[in-house]
Image 1 (spheres, rainbow, N blue to C red):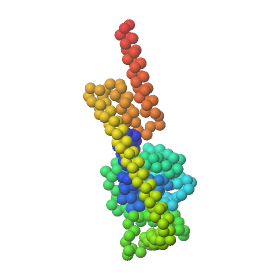
Image 2: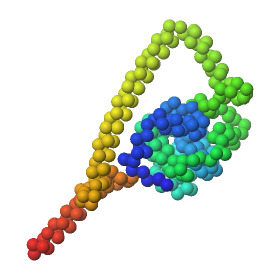
Image 3: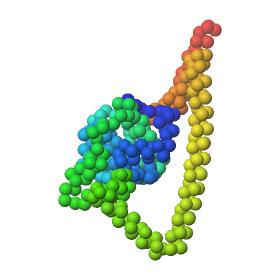
Image 4: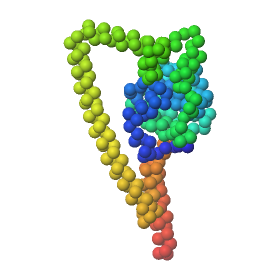
Length: 277
């Protein structure tokens, strides 16, 4: 199973949309932004779904808003990693800040790991909604059991279900219509401004995707070149592959490659000196 995944692994080229779709489909959620998973609750349930019962879901706070509460979720996740002997350091201090890139990279790693377990086939008997609700009830037996909007199930449109989450969302929709009517022209301007902002963000995202694909293609060409039979064993190719295939190492991959080349150069120089002697 993939615990150490190099930064050039294809896992880190999975886009945000695919990650969000994966989370929403597997856990029946309705996330629209990567930052909404910054609390660590989603990651805990993904591991719980992959290894049912390993994560004490009653300790997972889906309504975590403060960094303190989020850190508690990541402690639960780290304990699960330790129990499963998953060698992965969690950059908690960076993740709880809600930075999209940091959270995206961790979710990309998590997706690759979960996909490597049983071929990515999850337990068919696992009900993510019931598991979340049970965890909330166990944590707050007498308190509020409301799950935040971003973590509500994405199939709440059944009119006959009587589900309180669905009623809350329906109520919110009706209120939204009332406020929209009262807002009039101001609301229309806000919608137009937001639409323009979304269009600009989509354009920026497309450009970034193209840039990513461009550089990934260059790196892939270098990898193929280094794998050719005539070149794969020469020192420079070996050094380059050390950088390309480096996992989330604590040491710099560049430093390791330079050290390898330095050792080879020294050994070659000593061999030449012996021949001259």
